Structure formats: structure tokens, C-alpha cells
Image: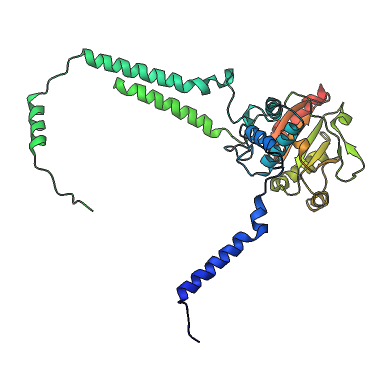
Length: 170
Length: 176
């Protein structure tokens, strides 16, 4: 029996068929279904609140980003509370009462967080001040002329032939 | 020489901040609930589903609430310590069985040397735990006679924690 296709083509065709079979299998596609997508407006509010709340298990993620068990539970809690007609502010306050300010992904501006919020600006201002004063001081003092020895060394550096002991690589 | 003093000073300050910062445990988030009333709940008990457990039933005594689950690995670590504490009679320990399976929870207690809890509340969906700001099992709360949370310990209890923190506090609260 004559072979109509080279092996490579047959292998490629097989791979495409296998991939299609995987992608088109409904059970695999549905693995990460969003719960309660029935109400897109509510879901958008849930996401908005979730993005303000820190996941306490994986601390550098919001509960919107996290797939941890607790994050999912908290998202469900948020969804339920918003569904009951509570405002976003009320839901966030509810979480703060239980988990403390730490649950807020954006730390609130209050006395204990002033250093956090304003510290960097203060440091920047201090840096600017130091820089400014240095520049002023330099402007006022006249530049010291080079000594004869320094002048000679500079001239030698400037007129020396380029060193080619370092080989250029492509 | 003086020009090195400022960088050296800044360096020393940074080292100081890092030395303190690296020792802090970011997992231990201070609970805003300390000093507040223990959130109310009424849940079915783990062993007797037709009976309930509620903090208000425990008014007038100092008690511990220990959040545990059969799937929680660190709970095994503290289980022996809890059994010792229960045997000592320093305070009644109540359990909050967190997002567990009733059968698995009961069997876990049998397999791990016994039940230190007077009774356990069965918090299947974890809602009560959210009210208590639980984010990592095991967690232990001390509740005083007036129903106020006085202390929260996150993570497994150890013999040292019991000796240095829990027992002195129980003594103080029971004495008052």
C-alpha cells in the first residue's frame, strides 16, 4: 500500500486532532466557572470590593486575585452582603471590624500610617534640600585650578593611543 | 573623616529598621477583636447535631475557643498540648470545627488521642470563623466571664505559649 503522506505531516495532523479533542471537551473548559455570573452588575461590585481587600492567607494578593479557600469564602460573603443591599462601604467596614486595617489593600490615612504615607515625600524633600545646598556651596567656591602634575597626567590620558588589548567580540 | 559620618549614620538606621522588621512575623496580624465581645453564633454541635453551642451559654466563665479542622496539619501539632491543657482543668476548651466534614472531624479526634473539647461547634461553611476573623487554622481565643475576647493566638499552641501566655492570663481572668 503506497504511503500518501510523509510521517511528519501525519504526526502534525495527529497533534492537531488531539489538541482539538482536548479543547473541545466541555468538562475541561468548565473547570473554572464563575459562580453567580447571573447578575453582571452585582459581580462587578463584588470585584470592586474584592480588589480593596487583602487575602490574609496569601498576603500580597487581593481576594479578587487569590484562589485561596479563604479568599473564595470572603468573596462569597461580599457577594451575599452586597446582594442583601448593603453598600460597598458597609461591606468593607464589616471586614475591617473582623480582620483589622490589615485587610485593606490600600492602607487608610490615619495617625499610625502617616509615616507610611508621607515618609517618602519627607525623605524626598530632605534629599532635595541637601542637593540644593551642595549645589549652592559648589557654585560659591571657585573651581580650584589643576596642578602642573595633574595637567600633565590629563594630557597623557587624552593623547594616549587607544588600547586594543581587549578584543572586541561580535 | 567627617564626611563618612552621615552615610554611616544612615546605614546604621537602615540596619536598625531591618533588624526589627525581619523579626516581625507578618503572619501574625493583630486582631481588632481583642477587647470586644465574642461574636455571637449558635451552631449545631459536632457530636450531637441536635444540640447547639453558643457563646452566650458560656457567660460567667472563662473559656477557650479553639478553631480546628481534620484537614489542618498544624492542628495535629498542638493537639497533645490541648489535651494536656484540658486535663489540667485550667479552663474549659470549646472547639470550632472549621469547614470540615462531620464524620472526618469525629474520626480525627479519635485517631489523634482524644477530644480535648467540652464540645465543638460545627461551622461547615466557615461563616462563624469569618466573624471571628479567622484566617489560619488553628487559632485560639480566650473569652472572659463577660464574654469579651481577651487574647487571640494564631497558629499551633505550644507548651511554652500555654505556660507563658495562656495560663497566666487564665489565672488573672479567673481571679478577677
